[in-house]
Amino acid sequence: MIKKGDFMLEIAIVEDEEKEAARLGVFLDRFSQENGVVLHHIWHSSAAAFLDGYQCQYDLILMDIRLPDMDGMKAAQRLRELDSAVVLIFFTSLAQYAVQGYSVDALDYILKPVNYPAFALKMRRAVERCRQKRERWLLLSTNSGAVQLQEFELYYVEIFDHHIRYHTRQANYDAYGTLKSVERSLPCSSFFRCNNQCIINLRYVTKIDGSTVVVDGR
Image (cartoon, rainbow, N blue to C red; front, side, top):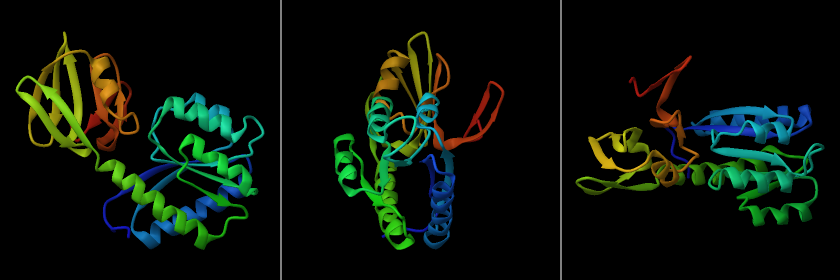
């Protein structure tokens, strides 16, 4: 059961037909109101353009399997090369195509024409999967020993001359290493490398102004 509260998801709709995309948008807005979750959704009419600009910024992707510029399965395979963790749901008019989705770790599929009860059922499962991802644990290797904390407790990471500092909810932890190794250890669905000195937790970004990013008020 979905727990109501301050929970927000970023969702991409990858669908070439504007009418179908608008229908999904209406369903998402209705689901948001009924279940007390904030769902920000953006429509992408081109799979190729969507993937070219992809930066692990979404929690959930709703993708049509039959797309004119790129087959949905090929698009999903490329997506998994960029992001192995994002939750993916296919929608299609032919069930036999949807079975292939499990090879790219799709959570589920929705048959067209989409009706709201079926959509809401799948969305509840997707929201719970996204919530579980948010509650993942991280194991940080620091100068004072290993530190285990949940993903949402890490605000951002800084590095200067191989000296790493983890800024977390409880305290700051220092370590020695490279930003590249830290980046590999963090899920790209939640963390983003801004430059050669900083990785931020995207959920705490409150403002972007030119080359300045505000994270948790800092």
